[in-house]
Length: 349
Image (cartoon, rainbow, N blue to C red):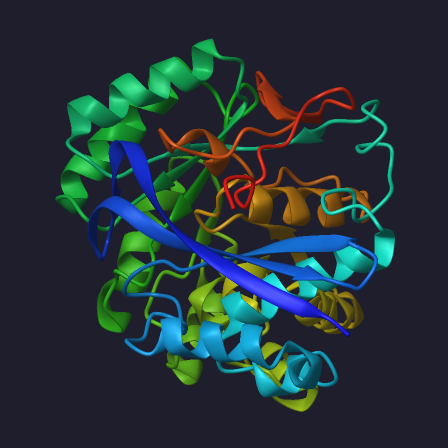
């Protein structure tokens, strides 16, 4: 028999996080602990992004409580039962993996987990005033990042072009890889014009230039774009294998972005990878503002894939009250310290 409990934590940003949907100062996460009769337990994280996650709903606390009360029923088929609450599905999956491995935090063995092979990541630059963004860019470059992801679509487009021009005047394509994330900010009728304007700055890729759900517009954009397009929000809520395959075959993007908290966890993300591989669509994984519990799961899973692309796993640094963990950054490399300690969110109980 299994027992389960949960605990909510409000994560506080060191600096306000600006996206095309607005500015975030805090965000919630729920930690789920599942334990067996022998005292072995696993811990997962249900992390939501207000305004984006399918789990961002007023009855989420009630659903989490029900899952914990009836955990023995849910674990029989939680991938199906929790498909409409993907972050919670990911949390249960992670906790169950911890039980299976008999260690709550060591889930996917690899050279990364041995402390010998880091994961190379991109630096994330939040949206903001151009001057503030330039300051953040300089800081990241001084820290040793050679790939930066910039959020676009929230400030004046000409200002964004000016910002990119300034960056490219100082750093060539060989010295600095630039990725953009529009979070669906461009209107379909203006998207191609904007992509052509952006392409002069040697952009690696752009995530979700137009809002999700506009398959025909996105297909046409992927055919004509001068910048490789990566689908992100487009994948959210697409659960069945047949629907996933149809989406990728219809749109045929250059890349897809895998965010387990938004897609339903590792198994769901592996399904996307299997289809993408068949269609020669490349991918990388990105954390979605999880605390270190969720980030740890994503990093360990990604490390088993041996991807040559830089991953988006730098968001563990953005909170003032993140859980202490063995994960640490050295420049643009994410490491796991074998001798590091975990802060258990349930220790106080």
